[in-house]
Length: 178
Image 1 (spheres, rainbow, N blue to C red):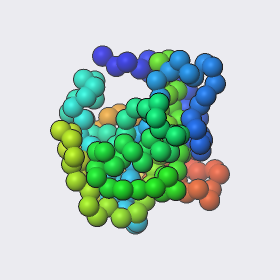
Image 2 (cartoon, rainbow, N blue to C red):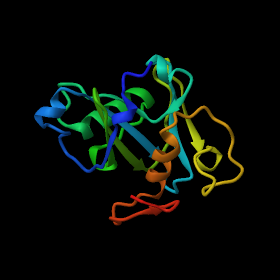
Image 3 (cartoon, rainbow, N blue to C red):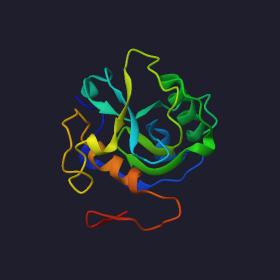
């Protein structure tokens, strides 16, 4: 059973520095979730989840809980990515492109692109590099997609990251403006 109430999800554009510090959101657990692409955005790093139970067996972006010792959400993203993939990145490598607010949590979603050299599994949750074209995320991206066990929200989070560019304020994908 999910700890998130998906019926009351609020989605907002990201680009924060310290996370949401409003009184309302201090009650929520805070998480980071990152999608690291190679320079051409042909490949993306995903992790095969074992925990929590509702994610068991599914692929997800790399991330985890924002800890009290994290300076901000960008530092949390850098820390989580290195802990799970061994790849060192910097806060400047990550762009917070969307926030997902649930009753009990807020998830800051990031994208990054750069070298994937040195990515390896460092926990009991395997990390792999997947060709974006092989993911069943949207028929607009590719008609020959394979069936990987993706968490449902990856079917729109990955395309949003794939097509996102900090230079643009208004992105249109599949008839929807972001």
